[in-house]
Image 1: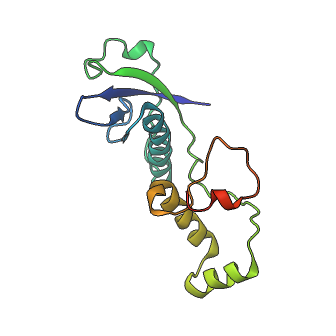
Image 2: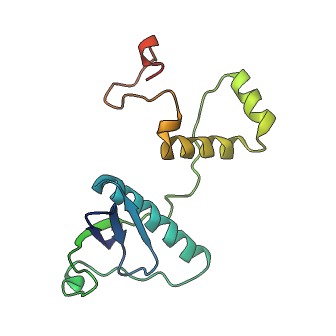
Image 3: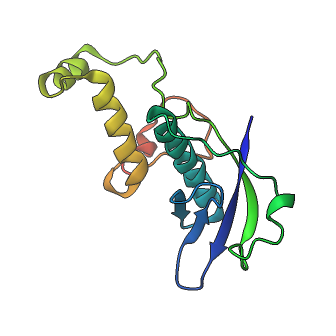
Length: 150
């Protein structure tokens, strides 16, 4: 898999910022290093997808060695981010939902897949808006009454 060099930097009063020297205009951020790198992979995939879709030139990524003396790097840390232009392509999955839930979804949504994808994006972007907050350290399985209202 191809990787692009990204510069990860943090100022005292900001989130972690990520920029790609080989892809001007492609940047991302996150409140933690892990989140910034995950968001950088997403931004890179989106940027590459748009370039490919529009038939624009996709720059060949330079290696770490080629960017050692880059004055734009400053005090940033150079990291490698995997480039997956298919990351945003829909993937068919099998999901089991009750008929009553499907009827409620169908009553307001023209497209089940889009509705479920948008609901998942909202949940991931704003977990504080939802009553159920899963314990990610707990093994997967059935919910217990103690899980509700967390």
